[in-house]
Length: 317
Image (cartoon, rainbow, N blue to C red):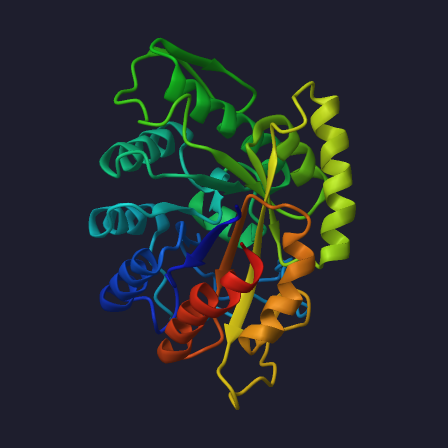
């Protein structure tokens, strides 16, 4: 059965304690399988880098908006929930020291009782890399590969040591280890061929973002080729999909709002959204995660309720 996830909005006017708690606890009560948060640390005022997931190439997050740090927020949400799984969608790995990141993620897994999953990505905003003093933007793919290996090393080895191109450390102890064995599942985000190859080598899932069913089908074929080339079993790397969504009741506002482009955003009544989503679920994802970023607080909650109560029963028997 496909697992159902929802984003806790950690940026913008709804990024506050009360709404984060309301979203997380209501999602858990409704039977959602997972909660996700997104990752940025700062918003440079001048950005020329192109955001890859909108037609405009713009992220649309003003520098003045609040943006809650994802690892701190995940720890907070872990303490406010009991059973629902939690993770970043996705954590930009090169932004943070890999050893400290491994420690923080392991701590969240321990404190949550083994409920963490880890979505990772290479990042897209060169200007934010520069502000954070991260490794060079042009090497972010190779850096991410190393950081994933460092996470796994520190999570699984009692005597952990690493010697890489960008980072190295001698024999260290890093405890506690995560509750989940061998480690929390890693999904690799991004729609590019390099992202697919990275998922095939290192991930338990490929994290696709707002692709049409036809685009997904072609990319999944390439993913299967790369999993085989990496010498892994066919089922070693699953599929996780993510879409924007807004669900309305009869007579509700179904006019698309920026940036609700068809394909990447599912907008309409429960019946219409189920119709849009079915070709994606027919491809067999293990997880489907949704975010409602274009609505008011009431619309975000309505969408969450209608998604689990009216859309999902039409699709998942």
